[in-house]
Amino acid sequence: MPRFLSGVRPLHKVLVGVGVLAVAAGLIVAPSVGDAYADITSAKSIIKGKDGKDYWVENHLDHKAADDSHKSGKRPEYLIVWAGDENVADTIVPDIQKLPGSLNSTVDKVRNALPGPDFLAVLDVTPGSPSYGKVVNTGTVGPLVENEPHHVQYVWHKGEKIYAGGLYSAATYIFDVSKLPSLSLSGISLPSNTLCGSVPDAYWVLKDGSAYGTYMGGPVAPGPCKYTHGEVRSGNGFAGTPGEVVRFAKDGKNLVEAPAATTKSEDPKQCLNTPRLGLPSCANPHGIHVREDLKTMVTSDYAEPRTIILDPVKAPSPYLRRPTVRTWDISDLNHPKVKSVSFLPEGPRAKANDPLHTENRAAMEVTATNLPGHKGAFAESMQGGAIFYTPDMTAEHPVWREVYDNTQADSKINGKPVSAEGDNGAWIQTSPDDKILYHSLQGRAPGGLGPDDPGTAGGVFALDISKLVEAGTDFKCNIDEKSEITAGGHESDCPKLDSALAINPDKKAGGPHWGALDNLKLGDDGYYHETDQPRRIATADYFVARTGLDGDHRVCIVDIGKDGKLTLDKNFKDEVTGQTCISFNRKNWPHGAFGNAKPHSMLFVTADDDIK
Image 1 (cartoon, rainbow, N blue to C red):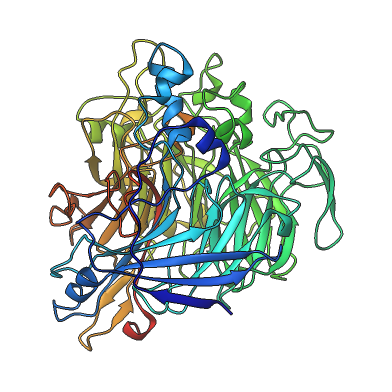
Image 2 (spheres, rainbow, N blue to C red; image 1 turned 135 degrees about the vertical axis):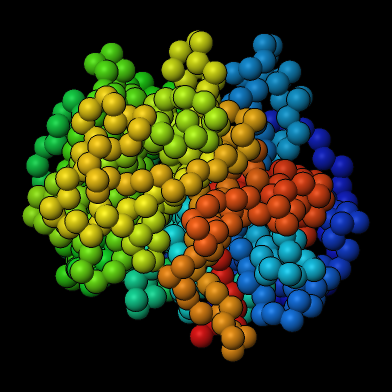
């Protein structure tokens, strides 16, 4: 059980200097909160880790914003945003790439040099609230810094904990949000708890409140590793290959580590490993979707993550970006087993001299259908710019086809013909009624396809997938002709573009990496209920700064009209600048003047007492 320390605590003002030694030492400097946040109460929730040390989340509650969130007469709804502190380790990569001179001259230009705490931001997203868009609380985590906050689960349901991963720290935090806007810490998993995997990515919460998490990277130490049920796989070390799936209890206890690699060698060319493995493998699970009713889980392999998080320039080979999707038998939740490994097909854009941008390259995310009777699943490729579909994820050997080329949506977002190659698509979700597929695109940086490439802007788009899903295993859609690249598929059951919205249209590669559907609706009884007709999407314009693909650190809300049209919520304004969308690039936070932050993932949530 967590313990709490609380009280009004002034944060003392200090002078901050830029220093490489301070960064290397992992120092946190806590300056004053400033005039913007004057009435802050802190309360710290502390638990013991497996290593015997204290770990915590510390609330910094803004009383005025919290009080205002109730003045609309509605029960408050919140957007929980998992965000990291920006510092010299993030900004120095693009600075080195863009500026001449020595390391020291670059460091002098860095704005947010010293590491600060990572945090969960609690934003008021109650329509009509006087504090709509304001930061009500920041829950800072400690003592770990440089977690690089990454993903949480894709959707929140009443009573669930929030599972949140640290890409660099290899830690999984479990937060209790039942008493929002206050937070508490229910558990933490450290690298010593998951010795056969590293680099946690995404989570799926099961009906009993436990969760599966994808650990994209290899074992903490190179060599053979024994998993929970005695299986042994050999890996090439932290942030390498193969990854795994972990099942966590609600208190963070490791219930099972299951290998994503099989006992057979996978394609040695398509599944390059560095250093090489005796059995080549593409097993680097990133996206995840679970259908407990079908006793099936699907995960997608993205990349050997050390080439993403440890190499800030580019991967040494395109074949370190994965084209594979895995299905799992989860009839025994504590013994998930890989059932199939599918290589997504190449499409009509494929070029022998550009394998990095072949349609199937970098299978980052998956999503499945939701309703009984539907068994389909979708996968998307970050570098390939395409969407794939299988009508039956439970099949012994699922058949995957390309069903949409993002070129059509990319061109709509950019207002002119552009190519989807390297458009950095990521978040993808089916609507609860299985009729619409939502997808985010960050866009391509200038020069991504060569020195004359101007790059592309990003946004979100919606596809009507109703005919495709209803066709079942008799579906006809197949993007296999060049004419289908720009116009959508020829077959009548291919997905149709419903709406496309540019976010940050003037900035190349500045669109959203991640998103979340608002599955909560206020009922006539004054309480929130889950809905299968979401009317909002939250997005975040941030990937991983040290890869060189950063973003402008904004969180936006997109309204979904009754006709399916996507529009930017212009009432969701930054409390500091008054501009549309909430900027995480700011000087002051409720927890102090720590400067810019990096919002990666988010969830629509409300207190347990406010939902039925």
